[in-house]
Structures are given as structure tokens and as C-alpha cells.
Image (tube, rainbow, N blue to C red):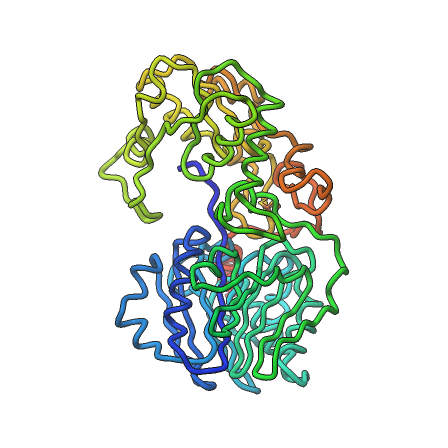
Length: 483
Ligand code: SF4
């Protein structure tokens, strides 16, 4: 589908007793699967001994009963689901990363993208570091372990490392005796923690993962905060808090996060309802039914219907069993691929003027086939409403938009896009409304750079997803030239 790829999901659990924490991680990662479907991993810490397993594939496929059993019991564990925004996919870059350093071991899982990873990596390599992966997460782990040499504790090493890390990162870090959660100073990516009925502390990218292990949400980790879970209690280190203005990724509310999650105090479902409501106010139309494109268009469609008074209907059924790795049979064209993934309920749309709500248009390549599906099912008119503003700029904070060329709104006006996709009318959420998704009076805390071109940090000079692979080949070419 013409969708942006999610970034990653992180999960960690700390217990004061030895338990089957691999299973807790499994349930947590399963709830976070929407954030990354390329690879996944779990590391269990049994009193300082780390057992890890990671592989490409979905959580359910990678973590069979036997694999979970082989990880054994422990008192701390961390897990990760990945869609790589830096570095190639595959097992090599699967997380959590486990490193042995001069003062022990550490496992680290990361969601986000550093904006200075290229410079940091070059500096580390010049000083003799040898990298095993091409992801920026390994850069973070090297910076922390380097700081660990002169730091009295792992949390102090993380604290010092955060002075050097720029960009987006929500981290869970496991040492032999501690679990640490840390969020970058801007708070681009979500991170929260809670507690289970039997006293285990749980850290996760989204609150839906806390729910999945029966943990009660306590609060979000604040931008710049380091939270340390140890046998002697929880400690918050706030040296980096308030240093930068919060710029939470607004697209988490529009598309990435699960609607049953609550992020920074605001329900994702409510934010999407509000998006639909704003769309109904700014782009009203005479119609008979409002439908959403599953899954993330559904809540906004409901909001549009509630605000406009036009009845809400189920227009599409999505085949839930198609994963990211789905391979289309033969040379299936885009039309066929859409049909394999989506089917219309003609009773909902036949003979009707339909408002169809979706969360975004990236390249614009699948909207046309979806609209044609509705017309084939008998829709008289199709009015498309998009619960995000037009994408105009790349993301440097962990979302897979690395080229302006891929974005249809860069080359075409809204009316041209309408004609290309074959809609009777087309309306996007405005930039003024996108910052009001969570509340009318809390509008100044979002990153909207991919819609506005206004970046909250310095923009890196080299942000190709596979820049480290590029670097390796560029270097070998240079070396070859010299020889
Ligand atoms: Fe989110 Fe867009 Fe900002 Fe990236 S540029 S963090 S996708 S709002």
C-alpha cells in the first residue's frame, strides 16, 4: 500500500523476582507489531547472564514456544520490533543490540533516528571502533559504552551520552542489574511506563503494550528524562528535561500509533476523531455515507460522520492475514494488489454519494485503485478526505520518507492530485488543525516538519536510509582508487 513505514517499537520489563519475562516481552511486542514488521528480538537477563534471540519476521513467527522456552526465566528483559529507517533490514540490524564492555554487558533497543549518527560514527571509526551493523542504534550503544568507562554508573553513562546524541530516540537499556528508559530532549517518539499487579515495572513505546501484559499505565517518560529501575527503587534523572522545546511527532496520532494507546496524556482514538471533525468543518460535502479506509482511516471517518451528521458505514473489509512480507502472485498490478488486500461492501456504497476518509496520501499510487473499487461497487460519487496535511518534506526523525521526489504533493496541486486519483472532490486536514488534534490549547508541542518543512532541529547533511552501507562502499571505492 501507499503508506509510510512505521519506525520501531521498544519494550522492557523489570521484576524483583525471577519470572518468565520472555513471555511478557512477547506479549508486549505483539501489541507493538504495527510499529515494525521486519524483525524482532528479545533479551532476557537472568541475574547478569543475557540470553537473546532475534530474527527477521513477525513476533508470532519468530518467537515460537521453543524459542521462548530457550530464553529462560529472568528478572529483567528488553524487546524490540523493527522497521529499519537507518541501515538495511535483515537479521544483522535486528535489535536489541547486546554489547560487552569493560564494565559488563548492556542490551539496547531504540526507536527513532539520530540526526548526527553519520558524524558520530565517523568519529568513532577514526578512533578504532569497529561496527557490526549499519544502524544508528549501534552508534548509540558505542557512545554509551565509551562514556561508561569513566562513569560511576550505567545511568550516568546514558546521561553523558545524551549530550552527544541529536535527533529522535526513545531507548530501553538493560544492564546486569538495571532497566533504563530514556527519551530524547524533544520527545519525538513516545515512551511510557506502568506496573503490573505483581509489581513488575514495564516500559513500552505505547500504552497498548502495557495493557497487553496487564500493567496499569503510570505516566509517559518526559522528553529528556532518564528513568532507572533497580532493586532499590526507581530514580528519575532530569538533567536534560526542559532543555529543548517538545516536538512530539504529530504523525504518531494520525497514523503510527494504535488508536487504543494514550500518548503524552492524549488518546490516539480521540485525536483521530478530532481530525475527522475538523475535516467535516473545513471540507463539508453533500453525501449519503462516510466510510474509512482500514485501519487508520476508520476513527477519522467516524469523527467526520459525527460532525457532519452523515451516516457512518463500513465500506471496506481488509484482509487481516496479509503481512508486510506478502508477495503478490506473478505480476499482479496495483489494482489487483489493492483487491487482494481490500474488498468493498457494496450494500454500503451502491448508488450513494460516498465520503472516503484515509490518513494520508504519500505517492498517490493506491488511492486511484481504491476509489475505482468503490465506483465498481456502485458508488455514485467519491469524495476523498485526508486526515493529515499534504506531505511535502522528508522526515529525519525515524519515518521512512527520505526523498521529496516520492511525495505526490511536491509535484502536483491538490486539484491535480484529485484528478490523478479520480475523486469527485479532495480535502486535506489543514496545518492549523493538525496541531489541534489533541487539544485546542496545547498546539505548540508538535513536530509537523513533513507537512510544513519547518524542522525543529538542525537538518543532517546525509540522511539516506542506507547511508552507512553507502559509506562502506564509497570508502572501499576510494580505497580501491588509491590502490
Ligand atoms: Fe513525525 Fe513528520 Fe516530524 Fe517525522 S517530520 S517526526 S513524521 S511529524
